[in-house]
Amino acid sequence: MKIGFVDSGIGLLAAAAAVRRLRADAHLVLSSDPAGMPWGPRAPQDVTARALACARAAADEGLDALIVACNTASVHALPALRAAFEPGLPVVGTVPAIKPAAARHSAVAIWATPATTGSPYQRGLIAEFGNGADITEVPCPGLADAVQHADADAVRAAVEAAAALTPAGVGAVVLGCTHYELVRSRIAEAVPGAELYGSADAVAAQALRRLVGAGAVGSGSGTQPGAAPGGSPDAPAVGAVDVLLGGRRAAMPEAALGYPEGAALAGSPATA
Image (cartoon, rainbow, N blue to C red; front, side, top):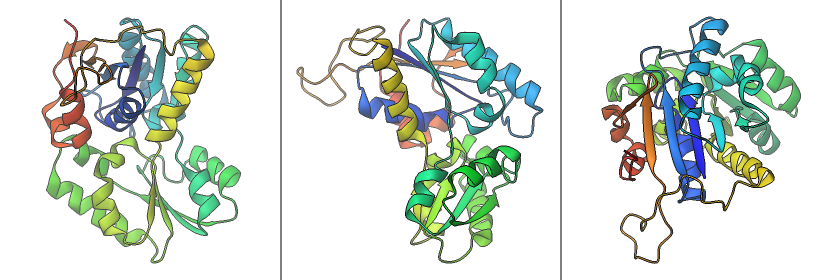
């Protein structure tokens, strides 16, 4: 079973790690566009073209499913991606976890990029899934870029700025950018008492459901033999992790290794 991930940068690590937790044997293909990152400020047509390029590079590896592990790409490029690849290749987008957050909390903050904050897309999700909660949209300028470059000082400053815009006493913070999930512990410290809602686990589960429906789960496609890291010979096989930067095979980006998700995935085997 081989699953591809598309994002402008290392935000796809959260979804990839979530898939790894659910299916250790899955072969993961991480396809990103560091030269074009961030996608948020770009025109929708540019985002679509870049997402399609990343997706085609991943699909050339022979995928069973494709996860669009980027909120911006899901907003602008998902219809084009599905038109290009489905029904032969299931395409799963990323949606901010507004629905579960609003179902459990009466006051919710949505942290997102400035381009997404206040957008018709996000406002539509709030209208559809807000459940009457008091929802505050919080722009987080610079946070995704700071996470991408593992710039601890810039991450700290961006998180503090967003926390200052977040009303006191909110019960939940929705992480509306996949990059933010890599620094969720820092966000939790900045908004004490708030429950954080990311998308990675739900996206991973949805992708596997689609694969079950397509009959791909259990086929062994793309898996690599070998024991799990630190495990016994009887441990589940661990699938390979291949990295594509701008469509070319590469090592895991140095910045990714500073996050537990990236370090864990970098320890997986890679194909030649």
